[in-house]
Image 1: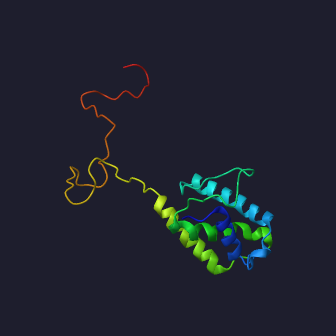
Image 2: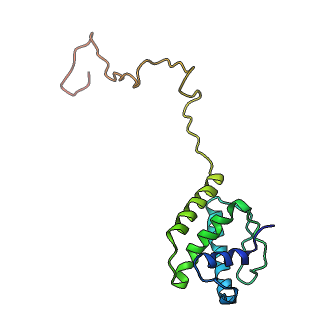
Length: 159
C-alpha cells in the first residue's frame, strides 16, 4: 500500500522537526503541506516525472487520499517536500536532508529522463565505418574560373 497524502505531509513535517508529537500538528498545517505537495508534484509532472500522483484542487484534497507514489520514490517526495515547506514555518533544513533530497530526486529524475539521440549520419562513426574522405575537412572549392583564351576587359563596359 502506498502512503496517503497526509502520511507524506506528516513525514515531511517530521523531517523539519515540527511533528515531533502527533498533537503538535494542526489541521491547517497539514492542509498547507498537502497543497504544497500537490504543487510540487504538478511541477515534477511538468518536468516529465509522472508518478501517478492524483493532483487535486484545494477543495477536493483530503489527507486520506492515496498518493499512488511507488515505494522507491517516497524518500524523494518526503525530503523535497520538507525543503518546500520549511520556510513557511521559519525552519532551516539540515544539510543531510538537502543532500538526501538531491540524491533521491536525481534517482527519480534519472528513471524518467530520456537520452538524446546523437547519431548524425546514417552510419555511426567507429569500427566498420569506411569514409570516402581521408581528410577531416573538405577541400576548398575554387569559385573563380580562369579564362585563358580571352583577354580581360577592365573598362567596365560590355564586352
